[in-house]
Amino acid sequence: MHKADEKFEVVLLEKKECTYSYFADPMYVFMDQEYNQYEIEADSMGDALNYLEDAMAIDVVFYDGRAISLELPTVVVREITYTEPAVRGDTSGKVLKPATISTGFSIPVPLFCEIGDNIEIDTRTNEYRSRVN
Image 1 (cartoon, rainbow, N blue to C red):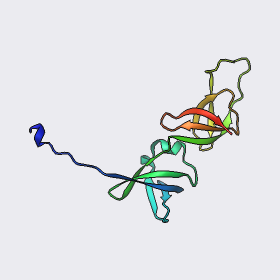
Image 2: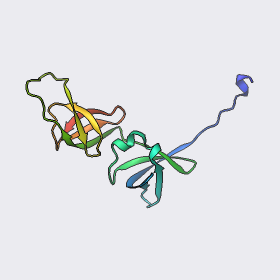
Image 3: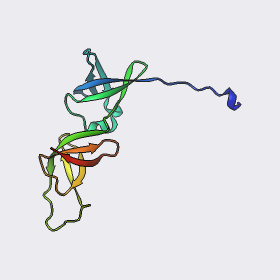
Image 4: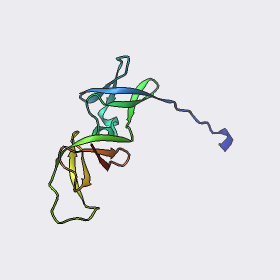
C-alpha cells in the first residue's frame, strides 16, 4: 500500500457543558441545561473523580451522540478537609505536606495551608497552585 492510498477516518467529538447530578453505580450522571441526562461509566472518568463535586459544571465529551468522557477545567478550587499541623522549625519554602480536599483526594500542599483553607489546584498536573480567600 502506498502512502497516497492510505485512508484516514475523521473522528468528530462534541462538547457540551453539563452539571454533575449523582452517582448511580457504576455510572456518573450529568444533566445539560435542557434537563437531558447523560451517563458516563466510572472507568471513563479518569482524574475527574479527584475533583468532582455535586452540581459542578463540567464539559462532557460526546462521540456519535454518546457521552464518553469529561474535560476538567484547568483550575479548580477545593477546601482542605484534613492536613497535619506544620512541623515547627522548618522554614524552607519548598517543604510540602499531604492534604485531603473535600472530594477525598490527597495532594501535597505548602506547610502554611490548614484545614478550612480553599486552594487552587491545576487539574492537568494535580498540583497545588495557590491559597485563595
